[in-house]
Length: 162
Length: 192
Image (cartoon, rainbow over all chains, first blue to last red; front, side, top):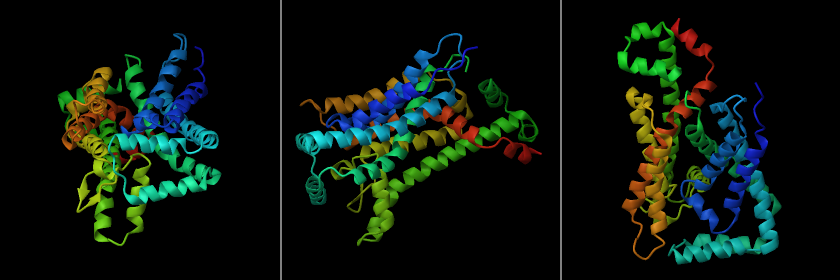
């Protein structure tokens, strides 16, 4: 029996999807629905992994999906940090501007402290230490929700006899 | 194979003293223990949501614990004040929809814990996924049209439906994952 396919590439694609959803202004509103973007990334990694499994290979297992979810979450945090830092370097505060406009259109009232925080963030500019710190903070929820997304994938794609 | 054993347990109702000395007992015990751990984890998560405004209410000048709780939950939720439940003008740690999802999940896993029939029932995952997520997605998508307005009730109901759906979909995989993390000799020692 052939050995199982590599988990790195599906996790990488799943992680990149999560990182893109986190980083692109407007698209990151998807994560307001119980981190739907992160769940989607975990789910995508299972879809891609399952596609690589040929009939002569061992079947998909729950352990495979669990590890796929964890890898996807970790990759998403690292990739997210890099993408967000690059967006801020290239486009400046476009993310904040788009978010504020969307919030305005949705008639969301932020408390004054939030406006103050945004103003402070604007003045500080790109901050590498802050980005690394944010990466460590987001690793836990990203891993947890990508793991849940991968488990949803397992439930959808699991072999029938299991 | 494992699920077939469990179905038999649910249907025949093997007396507990027999279960205690057999593999069925070990499996059942293992599953219940894993579900208990899952419930405890979800309950702690849900408690934190309510605890944050309560601490803020008790300590109006501010407290580090409340600050930490709001920051932790802030990573997974937008925490917009107008979209949240309140206790004495202090908002919950997550928005209405997230609160409903987490509490729906908690209620469902509690129900599953006390009903082995629900635990062993096989659901079509795609149907469960669609039935639970479509109402929530419709609620959000329709809110962008001028004909529909999101309310607290719609957020709560669609959130609870999604939470229950996720619990039905994930409880078995989650308990199996937790179960695989518990060393098997723990049960063998207990049943001797």
